[in-house]
Length: 460
Image 1 (cartoon, rainbow, N blue to C red):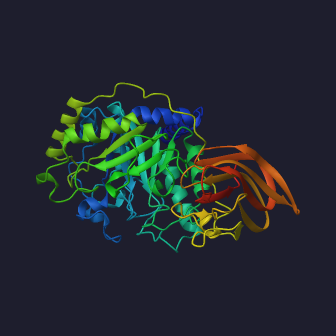
Image 2 (cartoon, rainbow, N blue to C red):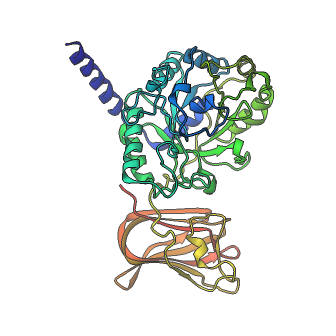
């Protein structure tokens, strides 16, 4: 009878979480920006190896935080006037710090034998803080790595995310890492982004999902994320003058993300500098700042970090909602049908031919020869494709008037004919079918160039 009652309670809880009324994405983005400041918690098996990327075969026996106290973490966050926390549920070496059924490589097979994700979510909620989770796609223990992705791997990722998004109450945001980055080399096609995105939204409709590796995409475009991300420790920088997107910037309070042996005796970053050079300026440009504070091997935050957080709290507080965000396009989340397909164009500059506009590299461009008056660019699918969105990204905005067309049974049909001076030009329309797509440029401020021409068949 007790098991039956417990099952009913869990079922009610599950359906209450998943029966949330889905809020508009822009409202969720606004709420995220309004949170302003939070705590990143890198705590996992790397904590015990003095390296951020440990041996993927490290034994669970080394994970033994004998004084684990997530309430201390939460109170430390509160002392800095933070509004949320985000925990590394699984980092790149694949160790899961929750009670997962997907693998034996998890915390329940460590000396701790306690679900750290539950300890964390319960403690932060008790202290009035929002809860977010971090999850790495790259997983060197389970061989989820470049050129080795299988259907079974994708299913494990889905199963793990399902556990994380159904067993721990409302999750305000999910930060994904190790995906579509030069160092991870796992593409959004190897692990299909759109499938994962829709899974997350089906489980937690009001959870904003962000990929921590969005640096390759233009600052003005929302590609494969609900929130623009900047890993400042890796040299990524947001414009403090021109940012127009809801954003997140992260930085560790120590010298690295996970706890190191010398952290207790090495000065942390200067609290005044963190407030005046990062937190305040970032908040002014719609950017939420998440400061990483890494617990030690006992499961506690060191005294020097605790003191710095209190200092931050004495200098800064959340003054309330940020200014209303400007309207932006919904994120692009689908596979780019145009990527690496045969392309053609009007006369190009010799070193900047048509291939550079669909090579999945926003630092290269097709550049029209300056003598061409009516420049055009075309992608050939070599077969009929269905699609319902096109995105044109320029290195800098110069195309102002153009026509988008698709070829249907040998006949060119118009999708758009008009003006759009944005650097990132996103067009969504009812699904059409064709074997070619092209842009014909009628007017540009200076020499025509396109960094990426994307064509998508979005699930709607």
